[in-house]
Image (cartoon, rainbow, N blue to C red; front, side, top):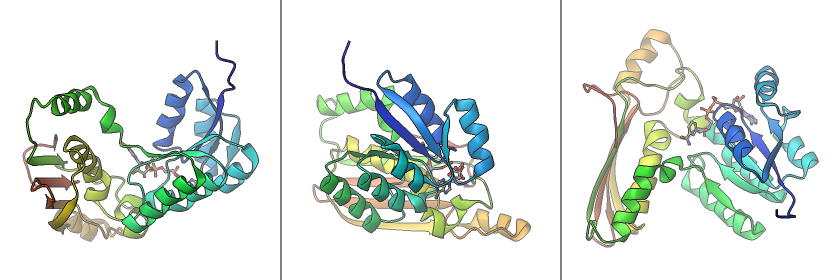
Length: 256
Ligand SMILES: NC(=O)c1ccc[n+]([C@@H]2O[C@H](COP(=O)([O-])OP(=O)(O)OC[C@H]3O[C@@H](n4cnc5c(N)ncnc54)[C@H](O)[C@@H]3O)[C@@H](O)[C@H]2O)c1
């Protein structure tokens, strides 16, 4: 048996963050010692079920007090940037939920901060770890598909606006709609499979016709797109078409 001590893990945000706690608990060298969530009632209820004793409504207090090795950031997108920077400053490796941040500038600063701190920063692009993705990546690397010069990747929900009236539909908190929420997974996977060629230009459009009808009926704040589609051209001549929607007038949802 290794004499190395177990790693002290903290998880911030207990929506999707619940899954992080459970997966860390499966790992023999990780101990989830503390969790943080700004919602005190939800924090207590979920931490109780998850069996985590140390609970904080202020994640910065958790970072100051707990001397953590690893922190998961699973809050609404707006807080990925400040909480990741704070966790890196506190000497932690960070697993941040997707999308990395509200925009590319914040994302670049997070990557630079991780390099400065000599800590790992990983974004939870969970689809890279499915059996299908691994099988496809192996086929690409073995040259079975030859030169991959065209890709098309879509994630369409027929009707699936997430938590209508909540932060997902508010640009200030989310940074955007279906593209930054669903399309970002697809874009990441396609770029990984295509070997990360350098994009030279893109053409795209965003729409919110279906959500706008719901906004009129329910009078909730929703100022992001419900559908985005675009094409990226790369320096090696390859082309990628990306489509993502939370709501689209089609016969069924599709995720490929
Ligand atoms: N990788 C995936 O497939 C996947 C799946 C679902 C969600 N996500 C991502 O996870 C993140 C959270 O999404 P969600 O669906 O869990 O949202 P959610 O609203 O269900 O949960 C977010 C939690 O964070 C808490 N919170 C908000 N601000 C906070 C702050 N400043 N400090 C501490 N806690 C705070 C809220 O109280 C809430 O409990 C998003 O970035 C989303 O894109 C990723």
